[in-house]
Amino acid sequence: MNSREGDEQARSTAEAVARRSYGKLVAFLAARTHDVASAEDALSEAFAAALADWPRNGCPANPEAWLMTVGRRKMIDVFRGERRSEIASEELQIMARRLEAAAADADRMGEIPDQRLALMFACAHPAIEAGIRAPLILQVILGLDAKAIASAFLTSPAAMGKRLGRAKEKIRQAGIPFGIPEREELPGRLETVLSAIYAAFAEGWSDPGGTDAERRDLSEEAMFLARLVTELLPEEPEALGLLALVLHAEARRRARRTTDGEFVPLGEQDTELWDSEMIDEAEALLRRASTLGSVGRYQLEGALQSAHVYRCRTGRDNWAEVVQLYDALLALSGSPVVAINRALAIAETHGADAALEAMPDIETDVRLAEYQPYWAARAELLAKKGAHDEARQAYERAIGLERDAAVRRFLQRREAALGN
Amino acid sequence: MKYLLMAYVNEGGFATLTKDQQDQGLAAYGAFMEAMKKAGVFVGSNRLQASTASTVVRVANGKSQVLDGPYADTKEQIGGYFLIDVPDMDAAISWAARCPASSHGAVELRPVWDMGALAA
Image 1 (cartoon, rainbow over the protein chains, first blue to last red):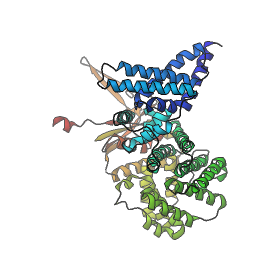
Image 2 (cartoon, rainbow over the protein chains, first blue to last red):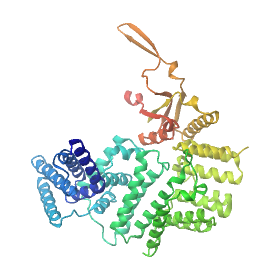
Image 3 (tube, each protein chain N blue to C red):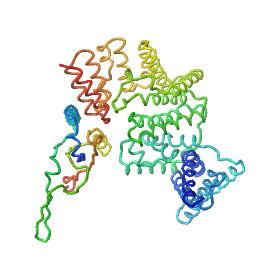
């Protein structure tokens, strides 16, 4: 084998391990030390060492174990190196010993224990600022860099980097536990993990055309995380519900754009383009969740997706059932976003006036004034009612607030269709 | 805080569109401006003529130099700007993302020096 082939093989092996095991390795290194940033640094040095070593000496039989060994040594070196400078040197020594002991256990067992879930619970701990939980999980479990995360969350890369750094510092200093919460605490703590994953998915989903590679990846990554949680906690109905919801939304991705990139709303999609394998899996997950005895937000959202799929495929009107599901969801979440979708469903059962009545009040939540779906929904309802001038104004507002050029053009077509 | 949103666009692009597409494109900018005004963040804006109408002036050692064309000869040129007043960078980024230019070109945003704060 020539050296270039060796390089390439080493690189592709390292990439494959990174994708599969990055979070597992970070979790292992961080769980004993609570030092996520050092774990990431040690691991990135280990990956660099792999790229230098593997082309020369061949890929190791167990690349994951190789990376873990090197990463662990780098991390212990850092701790020992800090002995003189840091006051808490004794603590660092204890951590280094703990890490060595755990590594010895792992060597004996022949596999690295999977502590990704514990790491996710630490990242989504209530003491961590809510807005940074999703970015933090994406970074430490999947190894996404601050730049990619910032792009998806529409924030500056420099600011995102700083906020991630602060959150890791907090985990280290505040004694945030690395573990799976006790039975009675689990549902509440799990909710913060699930909502972080959902936030990551929603960011990816805002680019349904998948024209932006980084965003498209994010929804796939979120699906990976949702799946991971169900694998590690197979008896949690809300985790199953979230995966079902994500699968349902993802199944329709191809149908949301025409071949020349125009936006297609749900009711006009070609159901043949939907991924029926994903839909079947989602349905099975929802059925399983329903046997586990507690309904929650994600199961309801999954059930709504399921109802939309049923209606579009069979042509049978099920709007009354959809409204009921939205009623339950609204009672649970109180979210204005849910209220908007509920109003659109009410338009189908009780007409536009009742729907406009059901829309959330912009006076009570000023954020709605800059929320595109609020204006788009209002425009649709006003158009349905025949209030064309008001509808036109609402469409204009929605167009001005939309980020996606295809959706903008769709709204412009809807506005033009109003006539005079 | 004030931010300048600079819209970088491919200048030849507009001429290649059909009349309908041009109208749709301009209407999207109109809606974007209106949305900023309604949100109370709009300070000012202008669409610029093509960079072929640009002139660069330098004076060095008492000698002036006047050159035709834009400062940097890149494929995408500043086609216009929007000055907005928003609470922070994230708000500025979300308006930049809504600017139609970020879909067919790119939008650079820069915080404006607050001279009042400097003097105080």
